[in-house]
Each structure stands twice: as C-alpha cells, then as structure tokens.
Amino acid sequence: MDKKATIIAFQQQDERTIQRFYHAQRPKFINWLKGRYRIGEENDCLEIYQRSFTVLYLNIKKGKLDQLEANLETYLFGIGKMIVKEWWREKKIEQQFSDMDEKEISDEQKEPNLSELALFTGGSNGSVDEAMSAQLLRALDELGEPCKTILQLFYWERNSMEAIARKTGYKNGKGAKKKKYLCLVKLRELMQKQ
Amino acid sequence: MFGETARINAKAMNKPAEKIALFDAFLQGELSPTERSEFELKLANDSNFKQAFDEFRQLENIIRNAEYHAIKNQLNEWEKETGKSQHSSVKIRRLSFIITAAAVAVLGFLSFHFFWNQPDDAALVAAHFEPYENVLTVRGETVTLEEGLNLYDQSSYESAIEIFKAFPEDRMAKFYLAESHMALKNFEAAIPIYEELATKSDVLDEVIPFHLALAYLGAGNKQACQEQLKTIPANSFYATAARDLLNDL
Image 1: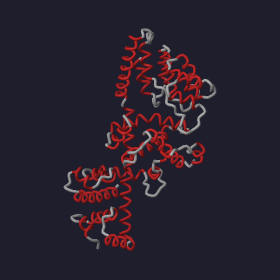
Image 2: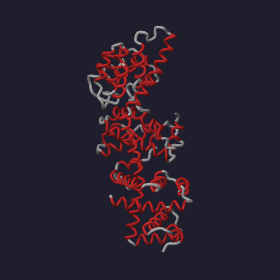
Image 3: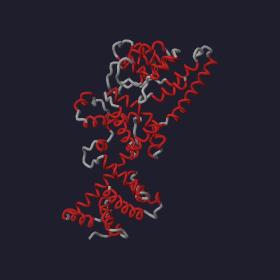
Image 4: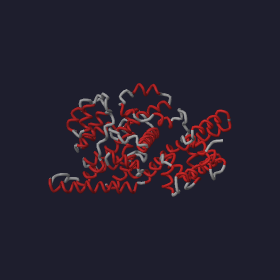
C-alpha cells in the first residue's frame, strides 16, 4: 500500500490497515532501538515503539502529514529519535544520549511536535498522569451511549457540533451541544465517584 | 449576568450544565465582547467561579489526553492478539509456503536440477528466510561498513560479501556476511559464521538462532535444524516462526 493510501486508511481509522502497519514496522523499529541505542530491555523498546506509533497516528489524524514528502517509515523513525531522547530524559541519563547522536536529525524528522511527546513524560504543563487517563476511560465506558460517542467525536476526532449532530441523530448542533454539556456533568460525577 | 449566548446555551439544562455551557462558550469564543468582559471580571474576582472554571479545563484536558492512553491500550490489545493468534499465523505462513513451493515447481520445469535434492526443505528455507534489515546505516551518518551495507540494501550480496570479509573482527560485518550468504543460498558458508556468532549474546540474540536453523535446513541437515529450532525460547520474536517450521518439517 502506498503512502497516500496508508494515510487515508489511518484517517478513516481502518483498523486492519493500521494494525498491519503497526506489526510491519515493529520488528525493524525495535531492532533499531536495540542496535543503535543499546536499549536492551524488550519492554522498554516496546514502550518507545508504542509511544512513537501513537504520535504518528495522531499526527496523521490531525492532517499534519497530508503533505509529507518523506515516507511514513522515515517519519516514524524520526519520531522514534525524539521519543528516545525524552525516554532518556525520564531515565535521567540525557548526557549519554547526546553523546550517542542526535546531530543528524534532519528538518523533516524534526517535524514531530515535542509538546505531544511530553504528554508521555509527565513533565510539561497540562500533562496528565496515566492513572487519571485510565480513570477517565473507565468513566467514559460507564457513561455509555450516546455520551461516549459525543465526547469522543468532539474531543478526540475534533468534529464540529453540527457534524456530531449528523452522526448521532440530533436535530442540529445546538441539540448535540446541550447533550454534550449534560454528558460532561455526568462524566465529572463519575470521575469524582471513582 | 451574562447575555444571550450563555442563556441560549443554558436553556433547559440543570445548574452544573449551565455553568459548563458558559465555560464552554467562553473557551470556544462564542461570547459577545460584553459577555466576555463580564466573564473575565468574574474570573478575576470570584475565587469559587475561578476554581470551577479551572476544574472544567482540567476535565477537558484529561479527556483529550486520555486519547493517547486509549490508543496505547489498543496497541497492547494487538500485542496480546499477536501472542494468541498462532493459528492464523500458521495459515498465513502456510500460504506463503504454498506460493513459494509453486514458484519452485515452475522453476523446476525451467531448470531440472534446481532444488532437486531437497525440494521441500529448500522451499521452506525460501519461505522463512528474509535477509535481516540493515539496522546500522542511518541517513547522513558515517558508518564504517556503510559501503557494504549499501550494497546489501540493494541486494548486491556478492559485492557486499567482499566488503564484509574485509572486517573479520567486526561482529556486525560477520552477521551481514552470513545473511548475504543465506540470500545467495550459500548455506554451508553461512553456518560456521552463525555458529560463531551464536556463542556471544547481544542484540542479534533472536535472529541468529533462527537463521542458523534455516542454514542447517538449506544445507540438508534437517536434524540439526530441528534441534536448533527447539532451542528458540517462547518469548523470542521468532518463536512462532520456529514452531511453524518445526510443524512443517
């Protein structure tokens, strides 16, 4: 599958294609981490790969890669370099990383947004710890439909309220918006209960 | 307090929802200039109002960031599925074996001697062997073996071999030398190199045992191949492939 088709498949959330791409890149990426950065622990490698893949996925979804000239694999490895850097920082051995490389990262590979990478590190403003996210995901499940879909479409898929109304059967954006507010109240209650 | 926009949003909702509607209208830039000024004034002078507003922003922040973790949960599910999907994996691998065997059969008509000694084993090696990726060369970086690795990347294995041979003390050069021999079906040449590499432990721990098994098979030593495959641990990346190959033998 060529780059454009893969990007479209990601944007349409074609799970089969995304999963295939995830598994196809995994061994090479992990071997690269082991060989290049001497990260020996399989779990650490997997963590870094998943963080990198997540950033790639979200950037595609946001349309940031629509004009990408490099191939997706190069971009993924570019993200990987940034994630490794953040990962070393977490491990407080940044010096070792800067001794190893970083100098060759091209402009194209610098494209990944560091503020997004920081979401994983807990070190930036607005970052939320994993436990809080897990709590939120449980609350969303408990919230049920249509609230779960409305909130996901608004906050995760960046849909307008008019688009959400069309997708969820509300008469118009105003109706969907009112429902969204009620859903947020309920969600907050569920979060406080946990 | 607050004008038309907020009142419209708040219509037919309970108190907490009204407050959220107001906060949302402010954040989405839907308040009129007057309403916005009123809002900012209240934010500056009413600590309870400010606290409620901060909590709402925090809630939105948590929802947005939870997407990252939802994706990561999905990736972990895929990891689990991969571990469980041995049956489907076998199907895919068998299909790839059938395709390879069919290709070998066609070649048999064209060249009678091709693979005739061990047709099944040769097909199995072809089905399972894929030259290991060049994990050393990174664009813009000077690497000692770069020239050889570039040739390797271009599948110019014979030329690559000549360069790799010039680095007899370099473990990576030896590894790619063995891989190049495998790609050219020089199994006998690859075996002693893999055997030597297998005595040391490093990042190639997973691939070497599996490719050594394939080299034994390619060279016609099925028993050594089976014994080698049995040494591959269950947590190896090649565990499923090793199991499949053992079943096929």
